[in-house]
Length: 68
Image (cartoon, rainbow, N blue to C red; front, top):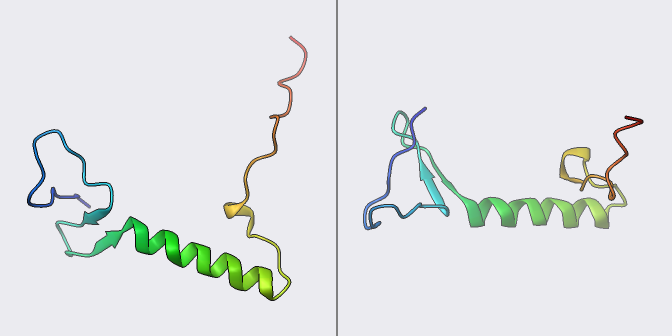
């Protein structure tokens, strides 16, 4: 899948907010995706569920690498 440059961007400028697939012309909007994730997290919290493992932060501080 190739991602194309959106019109109106200057050379060297990266289009972080919207990506478009050259093959199927599907678009992804970063802000809409983030809002959907926040909505799902809120609904899970209201229903008494925990965050999905993929949406949890790693433990801090990171575990020690061991002796050595």
